Image (tube, rainbow, N blue to C red; front, side):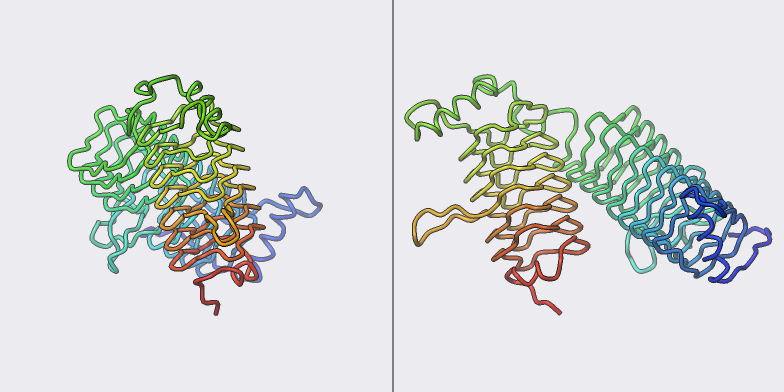
Length: 428
């Protein structure tokens, strides 16, 4: 860290005793005491899964420590040395990380909601070529930065004003309401990042990649965006054809579609929403949308709960964060659709039987379902070939006969017996 503060070295056994008393304190049990570990040397020690919320670790050395899954909410880590530590899945809600060094630390999937990361610098590409994020002390030079991984981290409401985040990878990070005033994000990767309501006033985002990022409600006053790749980014402007271009009010068209479905095409009219930006639509929940034609539609964050969408065509649609809980999606086409963080809990994505020899199965080949909720969903015979189900919650989902050829399941929540029921996966 480059300072002369004395650090008190303790053993794993001594640390376990301190943490045990802290956990007793957290549970209001007799004999408990808050952990005060200021200026302690905890290099390489194991705190994985432990509860250290509200502990004071000011100035402590946690290099190469295991903090995976630890609860560090409201923890004081001011000026702490956390280089090369394992913080995967850790919770750091409202943690004070001002001036802390996170070089080489792994924060994959960490929760940093409302964390304070000011007064440091986030940056640079590591020597192995990977994109990482760092908080470095003021005398560090960009040449020797060894950053921390922050893939898919939640940085909502975090304070990053003035931070230097050049070449940093924020892919798919959730950054709702994040303070990025005057932040240096040159050449950063923000693909798919959720930046709703983020304050990027005066930020330097030149050369950054914002492909598919969500910038609705973001403050972009004096933001420098020269050379930034905004392909597929969602802003406050319609990303497709606006609702105002519909020939009739959407609610009326939904009713006419229900008549069309109920009369087998003899009355009403089919609903064609191809390429429309449907953000803000409020009449689709519980609606009859069977055979809906909406490839490429923007349905980001839309409430579609309990809708009937059998055999619908939503190929390539943007359904990130959408509510599809309890939907009837049998035989639907969601090829290459974006479903990150969508709620599909209890949805039926099984197949429809046409006759004794033919079925129509749900098509999700190439779909992106990172962090999607599929708890209790019926996924019988679904085609997930090449789909990205990383960190998706598949607990209690019925996966019998599903095709997972080439699918990505890193961090997904499911049981081994579920995997044994699917096709295309080789179990170790």
